[in-house]
Length: 196
Ligand SMILES: Cc1cc2nc3c(=O)[nH]c(=O)nc-3n(C[C@H](O)[C@H](O)[C@H](O)COP(=O)(O)O)c2cc1C
Image (cartoon, rainbow, N blue to C red; front, top):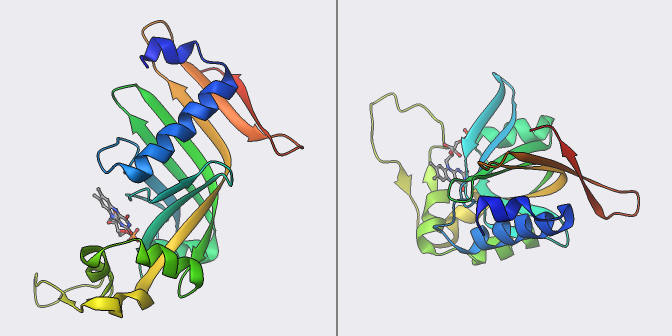
């Protein structure tokens, strides 16, 4: 769909289109929604953003899932404040999606195990690193030590982010359009147009 065609969609159709993109991105490593930027509270700096990979997207539950190392700085922030703000941009279709979410961290539980099993050996090795991500290397750059197999599972976390608000900004020559989605009392999502 072109940006002009996307402008024609009703809010409920655009909602479906957004979740279709999020679903594709979770399966397709080349999709432009695959690496969103997510911002969390940072105990030292107030706020911090970083790129992550979107691993799962569930339109029925309204959740987006990321994987990370439970020793990572972002998890220290999530302990204090579970809200995660995610920002996706598709340059081809000129669509930005911002998702305001509340995260639940799964580490060492059945959900973490399922997420872990969905990943291959190369991903597993990333979590079996010592010392922890972000640790200073006083001796200069050296590749950190890595274990093989299941050793990294104890450091692995699946972060499930429940969407509480979502905003879609469609850029188009004909005029930009911005829609803000919130849940109604009956649980359905309602999109309200706002000034771009
Ligand atoms: C394209 C790309 C994808 C990334 N994917 C992830 C990811 O899925 N999970 C993750 O924890 N970090 C990922 N990172 C690294 C983070 O951006 C960040 O450097 C790291 O998680 C440390 O962040 P923190 O100290 O805020 O926890 C990715 C970086 C890039 C450039």
